[in-house]
View 1: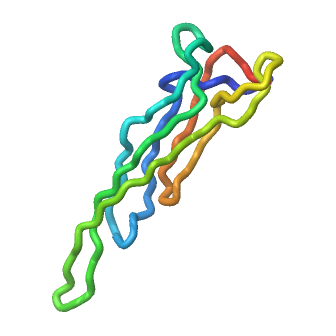
View 2: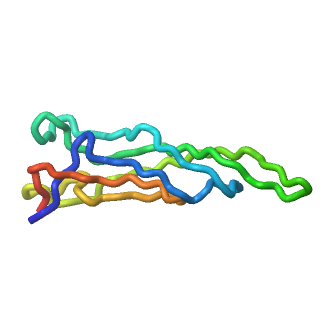
Length: 122
């Protein structure tokens, strides 16, 4: 049995934990996940997707040695893109995201597909 295909709403963004240079502490926040659907390929009322993208934003600080030590604000962004690989879908080759597909950025920011839809790849 193949993997379930992804539809709108099946991609989750998970912020990473590695600080954006030169920060030594801070946190990442996930923005909105943008999905790229096929217009005519659907499961129920939801469109099947072939690509997802999210921009993560970092806010943190860098400790600057000295007496006394000081801190400098650091911010940055990272965009993670998840693109479908070629799969066999009902006898034809197609690019669709499937359950378990994921992409991870340099700082641990991640996009992952969790799909349970009834249209299956082979």
